[in-house]
Image (cartoon, rainbow, N blue to C red):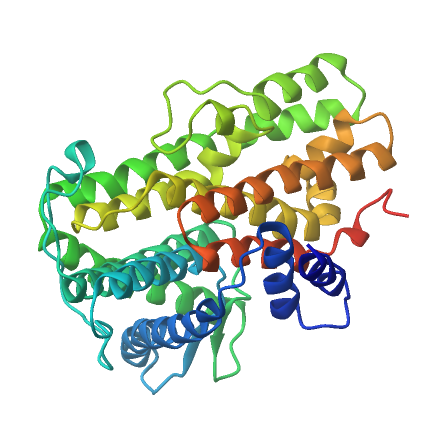
Length: 388
């Protein structure tokens, strides 16, 4: 008890590195200090960075052909964290089952075998620890490329090109060419991979994309509600509460049960970002890997929490000015004053990230629990009104 109390006090010291504070915070909350998770994180980071480098190399080949000269390319995205955590989850499970280390120096590539009935019936076979690692690495490569491709699509649709980094002096038109060429190269490669696998893989991936795009199609409607609410329209404010904050699910999400569905903004944020990672986890299941429901819940809850706490908090001023409805801008419209709005944002974030940590512990995935803690301790809520 004394140790966990000391760890909690140290975790609150902002002068310490955020990663260390996250480890201490998770230990303070759970009593679990898993030193192996620290080395596992470093290992997963190195291996997924190599996978991202392969993606960038593919893009650089396309850019060299497009521009007629060699181009160094990088793309700044935070969206691959769930794929990294899933790879770490499988590594940990495989090592617990193996007499030696099933993770070798080389990183598997190619197309994984697919168990077409896995989503309905669960994994049909018992994989060896080494085969678990191979299939997880293959599916992580596919997932990372798909996540980057999806993020690039959104950036192009929003005319946002600042995350496309090249080593020449590029104007706005050049960056658009870079973005469209990069995304086209990834889409072409992904299409080839999906064609080499049974249709059920593309169907699972496309289901998640379609679900998310159906929510995006309502963006103009939500913008109108926000504009009306800003003008004091009580009907619009009530619509935000009932249709955005506490919207009902038309169909039960695969991962969430009643507890998760009851969270504020659950339906809209699941459709906004969560479903894409549900779809990602289905790809691992189709590769014959056993992904526990508790782990899936922790991943989806953590990514929704990160979206609210990191992106929506940081973008509050821009979103309010541009009429973009998010859980953060919504709370300031629904709350009686700025101080209450600030408290509500903190409370909602903590509900998501605390539950993510709880499910990570249930799934024996300390790395995911530490990640949820890291997300929370990386936030900068002081930028919000009512924080002082």
